[in-house]
Length: 160
Length: 160
DNA sequence: CCTTGACCTCAAGTTTACTTGAGGTTCTAC
DNA sequence: GTAGAACCTCAAGTAAACTTGAGGTCAAGG
Image (cartoon, rainbow over all chains, first blue to last red; front, side, top):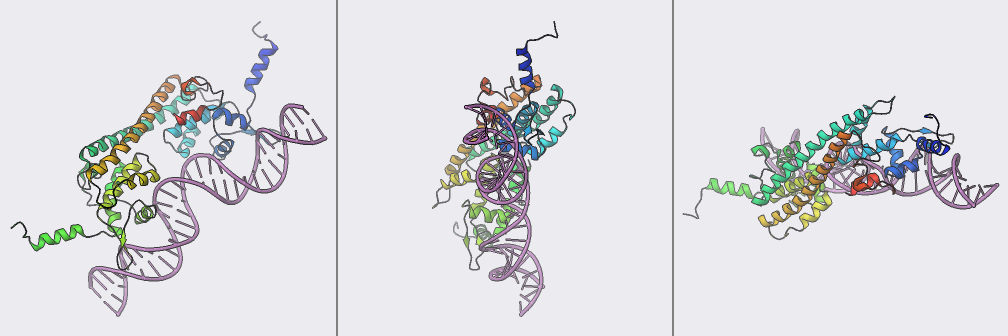
């Protein structure tokens, strides 16, 4: 009984397993076909070819592309994304735990970015108050009260 | 008595008024000389030339460059920065109020960016919880519960 | 005076993340 | 079996924000 199923059901399962074409992946993932070509060339995703040299994708690629997009939105460059993705197992389909690791890693970076921007906004608030961005007294100009003798005003800001 | 001053004092005032060379501006502003050339070509800063065709800058340029850097850190492209700077009065040296307007404008954009990133982080948190980034159920994949019929999953995210 | 460091211009190169185009092949549906 | 959509490769283009390089001028100190 458990091994029996309707031919309808079989069809659906076959459909679910069917590999995807670039066009399908592009549409479902919301990216251009050329982007998928590009990601493949950059080693971010993989595919195999059918007899006519056309790309075929496992459904997993959809999640991968989604992850790439999310990571990008957090401001992470593709290079780093590729490195992070490289930590995923190649043999088996990545598990929940695998994806969790990536999420956690990026969450940290995202938090850092948010904090940096928030600090900047607070300082900008102060500067609205004082109307300044003054060369001598503005925290945006002179973080940590270094009075720019070394002429590193703006640069120090970037580092912080 | 009020009109008298030592020659030392006079020297200092003269020094303070003295226009700056590119090299000086570069060092004090913490940017490369080539960057200043570039900013000038882009209409972000201005200078005049001495008899030997070398650039000379008013001290005000230091504040301008600082403002540019701050704006950039909030993620605003040079194009927009140029437009914002163009609202400053050309005749007189910008006042506190003038700079305030810019700060306020950018503060808004900065806040928006922070909020966007924070939302993203919250969603990522959810996804760490569910370990997913699942095609069907993850808010990062399907914002606003649109189930991607239109295949606009990831793209919609960008817009939001 | 003369050297040396600071400047000058203009063109071209760099990085990131893709897109566009040309020229040609494959697939699908009628 | 044929039209038209979808696919292929490879080179080149794009945008942002600068940097680098070549070839030449200017200025300040000894």
